[in-house]
Amino acid sequence: MTESVDRSQCRIRIDAAHYGRRQVLFNADVILEPKKVVGLFGHNGAGKSSLVNAAFGISPPIWEGSVRIDGRTMFKNSPEERVRSGMVLVPQGRGVFPSLTVSENFLLAHGAIKSGSSMDRKRLETIFELMPILRDKWNDKAGSLSGGQQQFVSVGRALLQNPRYLILDEPSVGLAPKLVEDMMKLIQVVSTQDGVGVLLVEQNVSQALQVIERAYVMRSGQITGEYTQEQLRESEYLWHLA
Image (cartoon, rainbow, N blue to C red):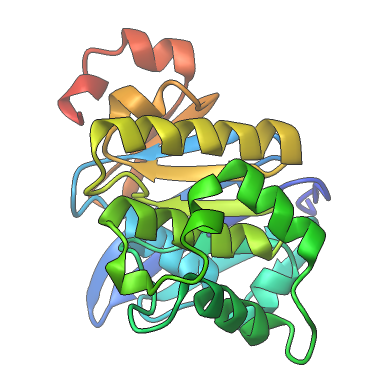
């Protein structure tokens, strides 16, 4: 039987992934939909970052499976091609260029995808409305910003690409509680107002539950379950991940 293709979703299916001879992922299947935030929970070493790195086509692991973005299969496509198709990743860690200003960081990210074109000012204004701190720090060196502010620079650069599907790998790591709240509110707005499908990879379970609709739980390279927000709130097992 031919597998049906939904042209309004991003489906990440990793049949197997290896670092050398060691298998790190087993039959992982994740679906993202526009306007919905989906969580991916699990302890350190559960395989969360391996899954998103494979999906985005960066570095090891060596993997077998498929990634479909709105019906288009992406297998050996480069990360840049995946961005053009609508998938954008904010990797774990801030990933800013500290010696460059915030504006130069944005220009560099934009040029890597749309060489020779200028930034969309309307899109940039929308990002400033979502994250006013970026306007305030626009001409400051990224390295002079706090860790939380650098994280917002990373998310802002991703939003500049106008994604349909946004993958955020541990965006709350190292953030003060108030900034974690701000980050979660931002994720919710991006999903509901911009119609973006979000995969939120998190260990801060209690905060993530404020914005997700459902979530996958990973353990030892496998997805052990898919749950609604209500089921997660009632799950004693899940709180061992917090």
